[in-house]
Length: 373
Ligand code: GLU
Image 1 (cartoon, helix red, strand yellow):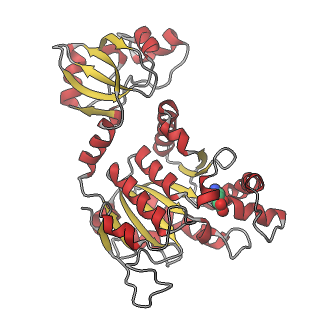
Image 2 (tube, rainbow, N blue to C red; image 1 turned 90 degrees about the vertical axis):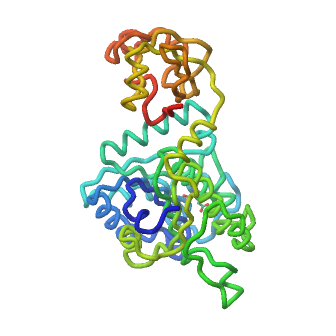
Image 3 (tube, rainbow, N blue to C red; image 1 turned 30 degrees about the horizontal axis):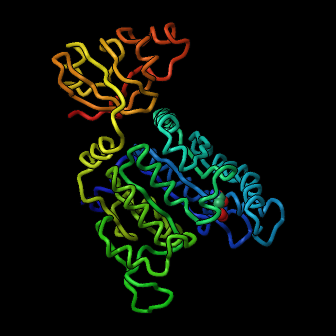
């Protein structure tokens, strides 16, 4: 189980900021708060952390831009307002991060994107590339095509899916409450803040109280998000986003909010998650060099080490890697379809473009998407 010191020191964080927190009492976005979080995130970046931000606030900003005082009722209107407001949301973040010389990138996602194998792999590569170039991805639901958050107040689930996607160490959910209480604090004066729990403990879902699965921004979605994040080994911290220096304090290991940790060790959880994820669609047969490199050096699988392809698969499918001795040694998410893999097998990475006319990734299977068996 993760403790607060470990969480504070961990490297890759997904930080989720909800609408109620980022909205300035119906007057659009709370720009001071955004400025403050950006400052803290810049400090965390300089400490070597990799950060991804999942932020709502598009509807609130859209309403402010249009001078609306009432939230529209019709879904299509909300979607239009969100599209309009997303511009401002991103603009505010960009301006604030620019002051710290940090690049930001806008990423709009839907849950469906993450259940489709190809899009999943595309999103994963994009986010990882953004992190590797030091940018902070600013992610929101793609409200034009998906309406989960508009209807259910649920960017928590999206944030957890992002944590799975990039195998984050921590999911930090900033909210307008102190954390998770054992009873609803609005109804019970003796409600106590839960400091730590196992994310999978069934009792804590019960404590989320009246928050039905459809409750807007309730604790229920936060706990189910923590459970989802735990599946890929991420610990979740639910904390009050308006506490002073909240992110820096979390990094210092201070006892803020509620920590919901995964039971299994992160590495084991990640392996289980990847391995249990999909059915194997095909096989790639490796030569001796690649078989050794994979098992002994933990490297990515390159096309040059592949002698034969069997089965029919698409980019993003799970394939089995078979050693030169005919034994399955690994499984992983493949970057090229079986048709293309056949064309590039035995070739060096810089020959991929010549053979296919494009390059997705230099590796056939990236080591992060590979599990040794
Ligand atoms: N994704 C939307 C946003 O960023 C929805 C939030 C809402 O329904 O207020 O604002």
